[in-house]
Structures are given as structure tokens and as C-alpha cells.
Image 1 (cartoon, rainbow, N blue to C red):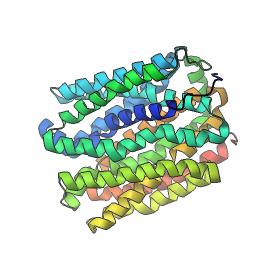
Image 2: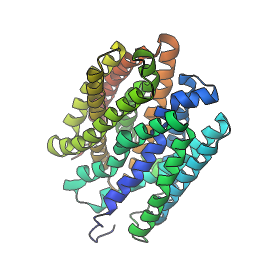
Image 3: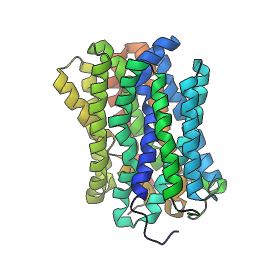
Image 4: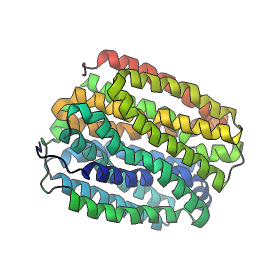
Length: 388
């Protein structure tokens, strides 16, 4: 492990990289309407682009983190962002839906390396007392992408065409690659991990039960979030500006939740924090099935929904690092994969709900899934190894 004092710019830089990753991953949410029109796809069909990305991430992330465990972290992080940028280029030029899906798979491979490696680097360089806040800071870029990247990408897509959103992702990716190469120390390594370590962790049923709570919690959110644009279009008669505004309020809530989650986990512990956030999701999401609402009420609802949804990651990562010990890089990679397992499952389930009951039913369905996530949490708390 590196013993020198960490570069004060390292965590902000890793967060910046996660911002680009988050924008490239989730901008699809704001593109569903214009993309679907050009590609002649309905909302549920176009929404499966997020499912494809999520499944690819879930499969590739732990494998590629394990396979690159012996390589210096600077090279791994720079290569991951380069791969992500190439995927944005392919998506911007995609002549058809198949090529666009291929671009999503390549993007998932790059993101699946960058995010867990960045988290492992930050966790290893800082003392345990600061760990939750440092992890929240690294994760901040993903949440900031919700407040800036996704709404801006949505506005660009409605105004100039959806391909320009991917050109923007590529333009942001290029300077990040250079900054990673300049600021991350050469030869930075920690205890190497391997495919054997991955196999050992996967065989630890109690640890995997704890990891998969990430999937069940976020899966409940994505039942609704993936289809928020068509929901707003049908229920509130919102177009470009209305959808962008709601996504902006969601993003602001996500940023506040990310900050709040780190402090709550440090102050009250991960268990109380995660239970409280589950209960909040159960209560808030059914209101989206009651649309239309007054604009100010919808804005407030979107803010608090995002704040309690995106506040969980610091506590969950703090919990998993306590369980994992020296296998933390692999467990964090599996946790990052679980994010996208949840997104894939939630998007797919939301599509089925829309097909069977209409888009307005996604709020109630999401709340029921959040209830299941709370049950999952309580079972995993009883089964998992004790953590600090």
C-alpha cells in the first residue's frame, strides 16, 4: 500500500472521471424520446439500451478489475477512460440500433474498470475514520452527473439531436484522460487481486448477499427513473424544458444525498442510514403514480426522491469494505457491478410494468420493489459477517 500523503487533487480528479462515466452511462434516460423517434423505437424498447449497458457492466467489471490487478493504477484508470471515450465516439456515429448497443457494451467495459478502481484507490489511501466521506467524494462525480450531465445531455438531445450528447461525453473524456496520466502517480499499486480472488469472493454467500443489496435498492429506483421522461410527457404534458427541469431537480437531490449519505454513515453507522433511506423510497415513489401534480410539488418530490436514493452509496461501501478486508478491490468491483444489475433489472421490470399497466404504474411498482429491498437488507444484516 502507498504510504505517502495522498495528492489533495487526487480525489477531485477521480470524482471528475466518475462525472464523465455517469453522464455517459445515464444520459440515455434523457434521450429516450428523441432517440426512440429516430430509431423508430418505443419508450420501453429504447430504454433497454440502459439494460444492455447494465448487464455488460455487471458481467465485465469484476472480470476486468481482477484481470488488471497487477497493472499500475494510473495505466488502468487512463485506459478505462480511453475505452469509454471510444465508446462515446462509436455511439455518436452509430448508423443503427445494433451498433448503438455495441457502443453501450464497450462503454460498460471502460466504466466497469474505472469506478471500482477509483474507489479502491481512495479507500486504501485514507484512514478508516475518513473513509465514508472520501468514498462519498469519489462517488460525488456520479451524482453530479445527474444534476449537470443528464439534464444538459437531455436539453442538447431535444435541441440538436441525441448524437450530440455523445459528442459532448467524448469532449469531456479527453482532458480527463490527460489529467489522470499527469496527476495519478506512476506505479501506484496495492495488494494485487486476481481471478482467483474473484472466485473466492463469489463463493462467499454472505458477502454476496450484502453486495447484492446495492442491486435490489437501486433496482427499485430504476423501475421508475428509466422511464421518467415518457412518464412526464404523458402525465404532465412536459416537453424539452419540463423534462430537463425535473432531471435538474433530481440531480440536485442526488448531489445533496451523496453528501448527506457520507455524513450520516459516519455519524450514525451504515445500518441505521440504509434502513432510513429504504423507508424514504417506499414512501416517496408512489406519488409519481399520482401525476399530474402541481409543478412545484413535482420538483420537491423529485429532489427528495433523489436525495434519499443516492444517499446510500457511502454507507453501503463502508459496510462492504469492513466485510472485505484485503479483498476490498474485488468486492467494490462486484458492488459496482451490482449497481448495474439493479439498473438492468429495474429497467427491464419497468418495461414490463409499462406493457401491462401503463407508464403511470411505475411509481407503485417501484415502491413495492423498495419494500423488497428493505427485506433484503434486514436478511443480509443478520447473515453477513460483522462489520465495524
